[in-house]
Length: 84
Image (cartoon, one colour):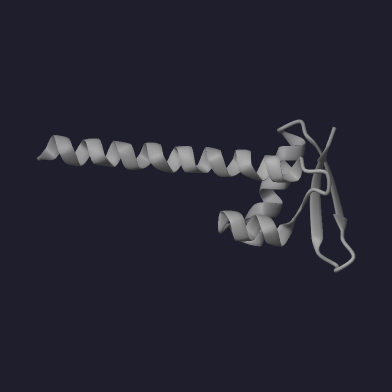
């Protein structure tokens, strides 16, 4: 019984890591779209808090080496885009 508990715990940790990686990759893909993506879209997709999204975008620009463009759209929403 203990082996199964350890195995399922290990699987759960692996699933969380894959989900985290997939969320990051998906957010980057969203930001690479022609018009980028809004802060609200990222929050809705990831279930992250807005300050978490802003921190992720900041680190992506500073340590990730991506050139991030941040602007507001016509509706006044914050938009992020990775420029080429």
